[in-house]
Amino acid sequence: MIEGIVIAWYALLGLIIGSFLNVVIYRFNTGKSLQGRSRCLSCGETLSWWHLVPVFSFMCLRARCSFCSARISFRYVAVELLTAFSFGLVAYLVHDFWLQPLYAVLMSVLVVILVYDILHMIIPDSLVLALGGIALVLAGYDAWLLFSFFDFALQPVVSMVGSRILAAAVGFLFFASLWRVSNGRWIGFGDAKLAIPLGFIVGWPGIISTIILSFWVGAAVSVFLLALQTLFARLKRGQHRLRFIPHSLTIKSEIPFAPFLIIGFLLVHFFAIDVFILIGNGIEKLGFFGY
View (cartoon, rainbow, N blue to C red):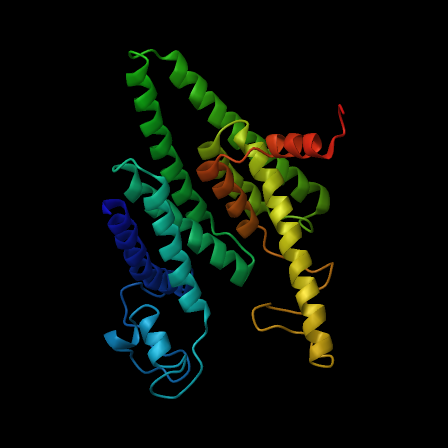
């Protein structure tokens, strides 16, 4: 009962924070202050508080501005719901009271990076630095727990820190190599920088599973979108553009990779998914070895 209340409270908090993250995403790197009143992007009218209630206002206004009737993008609701879901997930999976707020901040930064990369195909350095700061705090907390548990012995802490540094270096070097070899066509350098704090959090060998899962998820999503677009084009007699796909998608199209890297990170960090165990179980079930 209490756990359900905590999860619901965090989800509600996520809706509110998600509304603020929409402002951050829209105004980030534009020189606009985050403290200014929100306005309609079509008519410029100042929005009242009842225009900005997460999800509820969108539904009541039927996705249109109350002043000029311009359509309101579903992206705003998607960000609010995604943040609410991520906060609820934190409350459900993280049982350390002191870590829950920190992981909520972590999720907020990841949501901004994910959506910003989808919209602009770039990962701002300041967001990566913020993620790095969170990673250092998490590592410091884990180091203190290890230090206390092993009667203040330094060896476990040194091993843990070394594992995380190795993971961060491997993640960066892998994506940086892809970026270098392809001259930026396969992967962006921002993805290489993003792999540093994510690798530092999951440690070694978690970064390997994170990388592999990110490519698996990316391939699955790309194939799904291509198939969906093809089906949509046939149904609409050649109209081959979906509203939620930013441009006409082909096999050679550039797709933001940060969302897939973030999903891979979450699967490894929160659900302890090991791709080598998955592959091993798959081989065993197929009966490649033995009878």
